[in-house]
Length: 123
Image 1 (cartoon, rainbow, N blue to C red):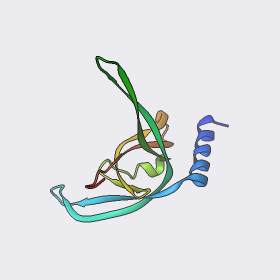
Image 2 (image 1 turned 135 degrees about the horizontal axis):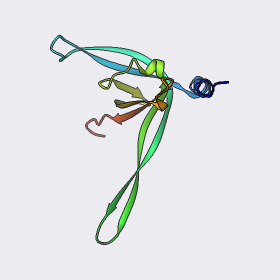
Image 3 (image 1 turned 45 degrees about the vertical axis):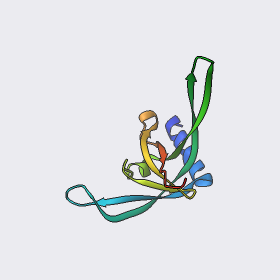
Image 4 (image 1 turned 180 degrees about the vertical axis):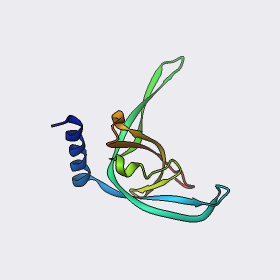
C-alpha cells in the first residue's frame, strides 16, 4: 500500500472519530474590497491541537524560558482549500483568525492551520 494513502486514511479516521466541526465566517466584500456588513458561514471538520513555542529571555541576572501554546487545526486538504487568511473560526466559545494554512509534506492531503485568538475587550 502506498504510504501517502495509508497516512491519509489514518488522518481521515482520526478526524472522523475525534474531530469536530467548526464554523468558519467570511466577511463579504464590495467591489472596492471593503467589508459590506454581510457574512458567509460554513463548517469544516478537523482536529484542534496545540503546539508549544519556547521563548527565551536573557538578562543580566539570568535567563528564563517560557512556553507559549499555539493553537492549530488539522483538516483534510480538500476542506482547507476553501479557507482564506481573512476568515474567522469559532471554536470552543472562542474566535480565531486564520494565520497560516500549511500543506503538510506538500502532498495536498492534509492541512495544518495556525490560529490566532481574537482579543476582545475584557478578556
